[in-house]
Length: 136
Image (cartoon, rainbow, N blue to C red):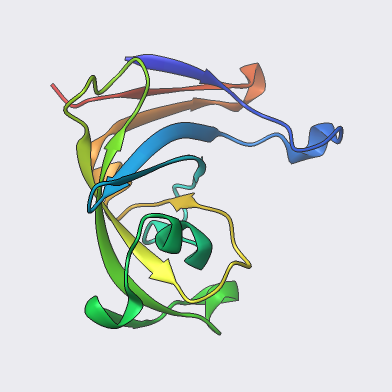
């Protein structure tokens, strides 16, 4: 189990969110990101620039079609990565599936498919922290 504080963007305390620092790898490339833990998101979403930084090639990946909600103007591709979380996964990492969007208008989202299928999350919003643990 690992604990993480809520983080604020800039100086506005109303932007405090459960952002998880992680290291994702794909095809020999590695990128450090902070993903917003979002239990209301059906899928995990990766902005276009992050997929490019990983060396992913849009036309070589499975088409997932358009995203939904406020991301409905974006299409996506299936991007499977290995993710390491400091203090939790060690060197082995865990497999994560992202809907790699054709836009940079969203943050990295860690949603139901498949972040919440891989890990257990407890959110303590009133205390400004959250816990992530591997299933037993």
